[in-house]
Length: 243
Image 1 (cartoon, rainbow, N blue to C red):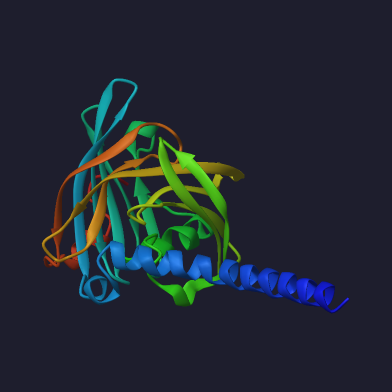
Image 2 (cartoon, rainbow, N blue to C red; image 1 turned 180 degrees about the vertical axis):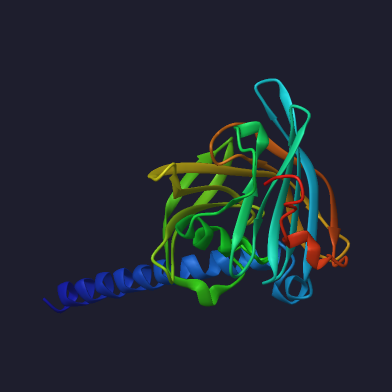
C-alpha cells in the first residue's frame, strides 16, 4: 500500500512538473526570440526605419516603401501601373490616396481601420518585443511550416486580439503567423510568412521577405535605412492636385 501511495505521489509530482514546464515554455520561447532578433536594448535604440522594396503580383512588380518614425507616423508609398499612391497613419488621423484602385482624391481612413493601423507606428510592432502588451501566451505544440520545424505559441494582447506565432525551433525567428484581420468589413483568417532574415549593422535582425496577408505575393525589401532623419512632411498628405 505504501508503495502504491508513493507511486501515485510520484505521478502527481511528475504531472505538476510537466504543467510548470508548459506554463514556462511560452515565455522561454519568446525570450529566446527576443535575444535571437537582437535583444531589446538594440531595438530600443531604433527610432526610425525606412524599408524599400517591391511586391510581385500577377506578373506585375509593385514598388513599395515603408517609412516608420516611432509614435509619430507610418507611411507606405506604392507605385503601380505608372501611378503613385500612399497610405499615411498618424496618432490622430490617417489618409490614403490609391489612384490605381480608382481613388481620384485623398481620402480619410475610417476610424475603425485607423485604430488598427496605428498599432504599426513603432519599429518594434509585430516583432513581439514588448512583453507588456502580451496578456497571455500559451505553448500549444509543434508543427512544420515550409519544411521548418516550429514551436507554436498562441498570443493574446491587451486588446484581446489573438494570433498564433510559429517560431523556428532552431533560430527562434518567427517564420509564420496566423491571425484575424478585418478585410472589407469582414473578419478573415490570414496567414503571413517571414523569411530571408538579415542582421543589420545596428545588431537587429529583420525578415527581408514577407508574404502579403492577402496572399497576393511576397514583399521583398531590398534596402533598409535605420535612424535617419524623417521629415515631418512625410506624414502629411499632398492635396495640391488631389482634391
